[in-house]
Image 1 (spheres, rainbow, N blue to C red):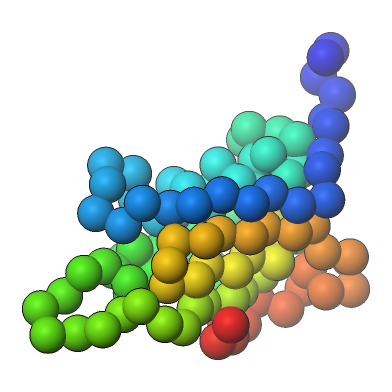
Image 2: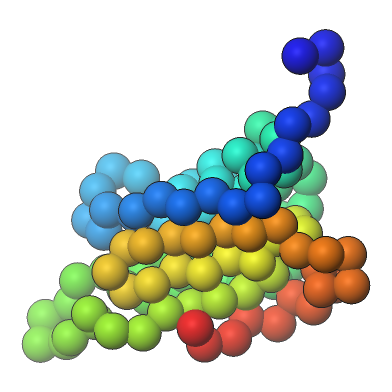
Length: 107
């Protein structure tokens, strides 16, 4: 591709809770797909917008806890990132006016 970036509008995948891959890795891989550059998501630390440890553990199975509902939504690296309790991950490229808001919100 001669160093060119090929971006897509969105990336959908499913994260396997309790698997070998951390949720943050799933998200960063997805962002790389959306922007078309495998290094793009690592140019700015994820912890600038959300606590990666908390994000990795928010839906992990826990004794006597029903974490089957809810979700997390935040913006990172010019993308809107949504993670649902069932493991669905949706990453959409934002317009430039939206990408400046790093605040996490409930999905």
